[in-house]
Amino acid sequence: MGIPRHEQRLAFGSAALEDAQSLWDIVAHEQPALVTLVRVAAEAAPPRRALSWCQDGTLRLWDADVRRSKKERCLWLDRQRRVSCIAFDGSRRALSGGEDGALRLWDLEREEALSAMKSFGGPVRCLAVDWLAQRALSGDLQGCLHLWDLARGAPLQELRGHAAYVSCVDLDWASRRALSGSQDRTLLLWRLGAQRPLRRLRGHEAGVACVAVDW
Image (cartoon, rainbow, N blue to C red; front, side, top):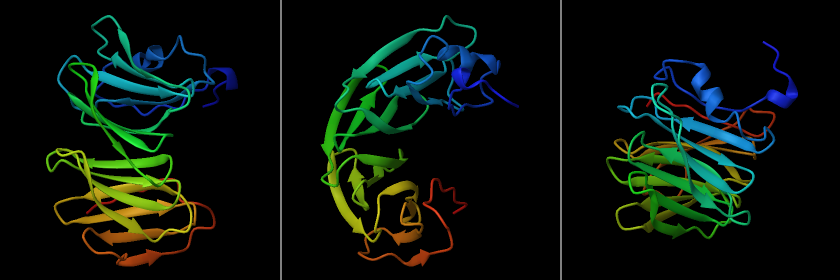
């Protein structure tokens, strides 16, 4: 299906939204060039919510339930410290990574940041969160991964192994394993707590953009 360039959006949605058009409507008033990504709660009870983060430096919370009026609240506005990635539990909490190297934990009910955690590897490029275990793994511009304790707002471990920035990561806290992808064209399999990767997977001819794992 061809979409005119001036109408293109990049959006991740869910079948939980009863009207596929509703996600398009959420960002309809935005300038197309500014919308970076929209993430929608997949299985949350009504009111379903969405988070959008944009090149204009905003992080917005939306009511994505098609039976309700679509309301939006701006949680963050900072052009110098733009949000670059986000993890969303679908109801009450979200974790954002920023161009300033910080991770911010959000209470979506109160619409405020609960804590900020500073990463020293430069801008954050990807996040994976286990909300039950209160653990997060972030990847940064310098090719490092950082394991975080969200309850304490403290770093637990730094993982080094990539030669370029980490672009994607998947985390399974139950098995203490993670898989990261990088612009160095490799995937690294990690056992959390160890200092070196378990395995380096090669074969891509360009940087790795995304990963998905059946643990």
